[in-house]
Image (tube, rainbow, N blue to C red; front, side):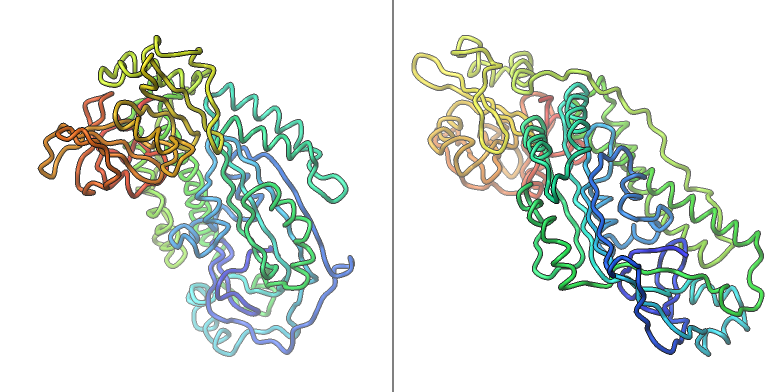
Length: 517
């Protein structure tokens, strides 16, 4: 018998495909539902925190079957845990911590289980048709309770910073619990990690009425402390035990060889889906942060990303076809995507300093506004901005001339000239506009004269009119093209507006819209 996560439509006696964990038709009649006992007061509570090293270990830790990924992939949000595992898919360049807790009550099971008359007749007529309709397992036990899984993702700047962060997390993670509470040392490690990297928290949860997803360590601490009581008061049916039909009196079914071919094909499709999700995550990270890698071939990596994206639904479809018809149990045309990933730099340097050197070497328009002569202190002595960011201002005898601003989610960008003066009046990164999301760009298209300039920020934009010399926060038409100075290529304005974070290279008209940080 195996324990699975209950999804929509699953209940006592429902048939289930044991590999894909897809609910089928109701196959079992029963006399009653009986409450069981686990010998431990009726409730089993567990909690765990671990560093995740691979996509397979993430899915295993969340009780997600690799083979079942062929069922969950096409429907996305139909399984919240699989959606979480896919959205925060594991790559080699970030660090992942999985925090989990589970409260499981004693199971309820069926008494007097037997095939429904319709299912019994279907099996007598055609065992393979029975399998297609009812699957090869049925839900025999149901557990109430609840669980939650939280993934902490730390995106580091280079291999050296990743190794240092992993060492500090390894040292504190073993004793993360103390007296039923989250260890202070572990909390301090997380807070320090947030200063050295970009951190995201994503949580899925079942059970416990009124419980809200935590957004920080303090909320997580309170949720952990109260979760078992909340679930005890408001449990949900969240796990089930599968039992094979063969434990019931059944006629002879498909041959062993046929079942083996079907099982192997579906399992291999699931394995390739998990590997594809992991490869897509690696590619996405490299394309978002190409400056962290040694001579990345951007066009080849973009092509590989597209190939993986196209392969995943094809694998899911092939597994479904194989489940319904043995003649489709072949892996032809679903070969994995192979691409050589570039080596990550050991030390990518301080992002403000790297950006400044890039401007001095390549951006003739911005460079005069941020020369070394306008530095009162070395570039490495930066000021701290909100939410883990940093910035450096440049000034001459007449006052500030420009600034470079960096946030771990957005990268480093330069603001200068008239746009910078207006940005400064509005509180720069501490103000309502937030951090810049792009360097200054020329506006082209839509009858633009190619002289006006614009900078895009987290919560707005500043537009300089060359004819009047005035700066406004008017939003330009989404159809225009922004052409950046560091390379001779542009990005569609609409792509900037619809994406609130750093723009990945594979979303751009050309790579140059985001230069090395």
